[in-house]
Length: 346
Ligand SMILES: [Zn+2]
Image 1 (tube, rainbow, N blue to C red):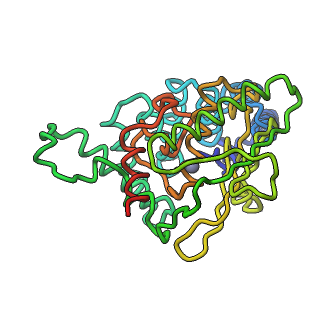
Image 2: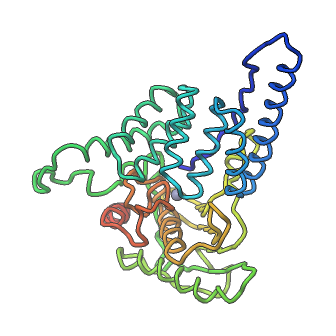
Image 3: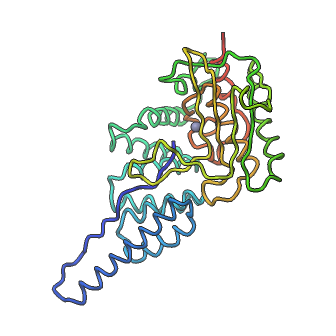
């Protein structure tokens, strides 16, 4: 689940319709300044320049502290810049001014979850569902709520849980798919990189191979690395260009950028081909990501290419919907391993 900033336009209603000419001029002047700052910051956000966008939005906020949209986009900038505490306070500001912003509720819940404040996360996920009964994200949010609710209850001993679904997230992650999986042994992988600085490529290559090895160590699957793209089952492309999410294009929303994209070709219940593209650029500030972050993205996308199509609601799994979350470690969790092994069980 990506957390897009809004495409809602600021509400620049004139607060006072005074008869005095000067007052009207000042009000509309402020309004057009805010509008301009909002538009410029919006462009910057579209170009991933969140720090600069944040600076403009702070100015807009000082001019018009009542605009929910300005507070919302400011919150989104803080979130992208990794300042969760500030993001939370700005989402709250936005909701105080407009209580009907479902995307703000969802993002706020995710921020609270990242801060491990499950009580407030739960409350805002629930508010989101009340606000948007037909949301596309509904099953995912329901799964998050189920998990957070369970976490708040006193722990029951493992033995009494039996084969509890807590041990894996198989049902969630394969919902709506044919539970397709690879039948090829070994799966041939072709790795290529398009980078401005070729010096990084050998370090990156080791990280990518290590991520494949981690999945093969956890399963009966094996991978071999080939030099000929035409012979590959999986092509893995690492780029330092930002990745645009085509799914969100042309819907009047700002372009969403992703760390990774995966496509698979399925025949019957068999995965016959896969492509992974990962960007080594940070989503927040366009710098190159640290090795651990790259490893997390690799583990996440390889999980998808192996047939785990959906996302885990547990923020410690590599298949968590927000793989950049600091709660995700660059290693497979027990639940990641249990889930892939259920998919590949005979
Ligand atoms: Zn994903």
